[in-house]
Image (tube, rainbow, N blue to C red; front, side, top):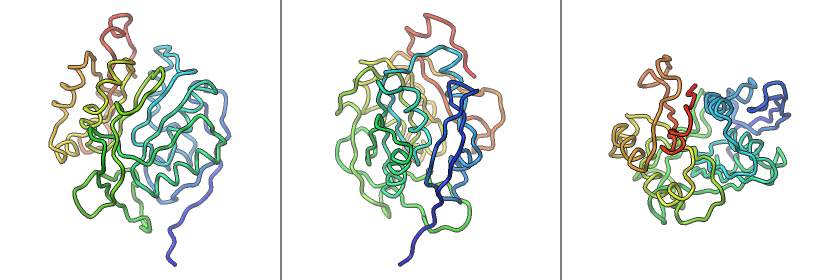
Length: 264
């Protein structure tokens, strides 16, 4: 029987909120995944500016709830679990079945009981969607987190709206869903208005276009909910399709007016 290749890794990754303390972490990884996996193996924080934002703006995450949409292999879920502590919860959603198994494995390997993993696509409907299936047997470099919602040649997965669930004290929502971000927002309006969390959202125009929307429309949708949208790493060149950092933070206007946020 054909089997894809994985390896077990141990890393002394720095605590995202405390640079001099290390977390001794364990992961089951695709060794040829050239995106998030590379950061885990090398022991550095992927998209560290998100954690810098929390630190520099003294945002309290302990005992709160974090929603992680696009859970991938669990890199963020494991870090988020340390942010919320024993009194908090992390809800992480990953639509790819195989990557969801990997996500659960990495949560389990690190002994985390405050993380809830969901094999679901978050969107604007409660039903089913189809997720692209990467070649898990690929021998060259690949980004297993880049799977998109498709209309054919994929695998059916349960679809859910955040507004179909009840959450307690949500401090922020991370949304990285390969162009499907607008649909996530549509299905989360009540949750957003109730909790007024910070939103960490990926803006990738060519992927948004494939789903029938755009960066301009996504920003306008978030702003219509009473948010100020700011780009991370503004002016810093990136090796991306657009040449810029793809991640933005959305700050509730009432919090934005309260104090001057530092955007890394």
